[in-house]
Image (cartoon, rainbow over all chains, first blue to last red; front, side, top):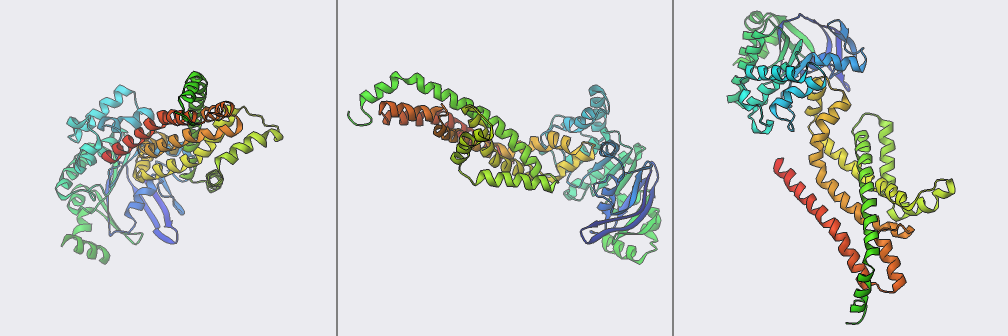
Length: 243
Length: 223
């Protein structure tokens, strides 16, 4: 479970998150939508403490991420996978090495066990045939699918998707959305998606947050947020995005 | 043929070639050790420059400013003449290695820092998001990529270091340039000695700088 308690995050004088209170249930699929600069990515990045709250706290499975010792933070991050906008695969490693390096070195299973897990995850994202390729030999969509498999190979309890399709060419977006959808359906992992793909959000989420100006403006099931928004800013935002 | 390049002068040089070989060997040894410690200093200082500690950064910048902006020959002179007065005694090889490593290390640190900064920030974040510490992320993910960027300019520094080892001649370092100097002074034969010494430096430096060019081309191709 992830719990935000009055979380404020600032970059210099700019307050990006203004007192977020939020509970994300275990195994749930939450989608965060909202205009650029609204604090969506920052919200995601506070969960693994890539951004430190100036005030308030983020509790992951009961542990205050800001208050724990460094080695405990590193350990906690092993259970919090992250998929980035720009994939961030390790270019000097093959696809398989990208998947196995961290779990082997951080001892999340024996080499054989991790390799088997990696191969199963590559199969799940339809990338088995590229096991020995380097990231530079893959298309953007393929790289993102490998990045998803890499995050899964850590056996995470929480998976964060930070605009995973924003850097992709239009024809590659669908393959990544399909992959994410399949993973979301098949795995009992708490997932939070920051995305501009509204159809995907409506289809996959059991909860949608609309974030604007550093505040959660709307928090409801997708049907309500998309078809019966309560906040005029949500209506205005959806109007711009959907039409 | 008469003058500084007479046959007699060349013959005398070839009779004493082993003396030069000894100096050549010492130049190689000092350069090898100097390069090893240069890399250690370069990586350590480069990492600090990319780190968060302001105090350490200032200290490293002060070190770099001092060593980059004073002539190497003065630094060698200080180690040789002044440190013994403070009770610090070093042999000439040690002086050579220390002076070359500190001097070239100040440049190497800049190269390492630039190479680390050239690796996209997302790489460090990806590694840290998997649970690697800052240092593990550096060693496993960032530095292996930075090596590709930093290797060509670092190889150029290696060439500079080898040539700069000739400064040891001012403190009787026993390396190639010192051998050339003392042999020429003793025999009053300068031409063949300096030409052959130049050729010997070329034998080490030319392949090294060709390697630098090759690495540079390869890294541009991979980019």
